[in-house]
Length: 200
Image (cartoon, rainbow, N blue to C red; front, side, top):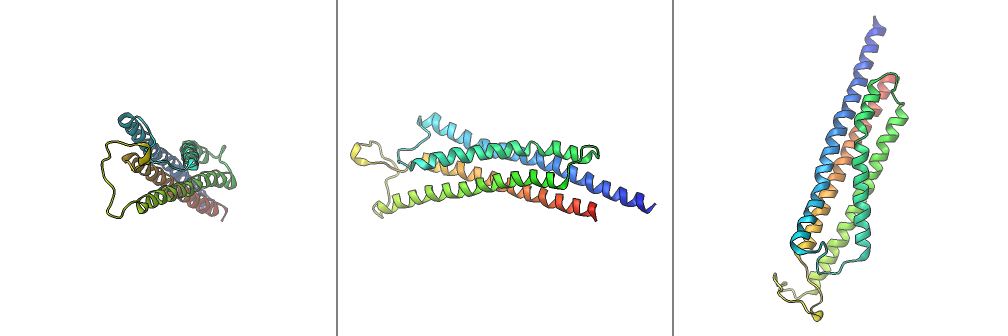
């Protein structure tokens, strides 16, 4: 009887872990899809009304490469989260249940990708904000004109709404990556806690 009680207790822990993977995988996937779509929609809106997704201010070329890498990392993390519900179904089935090392390795891959995305987003934001800061500090401290009707070659460049739209898009990507990291840490905690209880 005691053995049956222990077996039922272990079964409920495994079922809880499987449901956690399924629920967190679905929620994380859709949250990241919505938050990742926002920057794309914002830049499409900017392109529709301005005819360009880059403003008149010249930025560093490396920023464009960082932005592409950051978006690719977000796409990878979204794809990785789409695998968690099926992993949860495998965990619930005793015949296909993966080992603890296999499950934690899967979660760690998602965590590393989202953490790298966070680092790139922070680096990207620091570069962009530093450029804007230096641009405004080099201007007369009375401020800059909000509207500039004509730009000549001597005028150089100016800060536009596109610059701030790109920062807003980056904040959305960063938020998606932070949420992915939080969900990944929760899954890692639940995995180690459940498998330790099974082994104990």
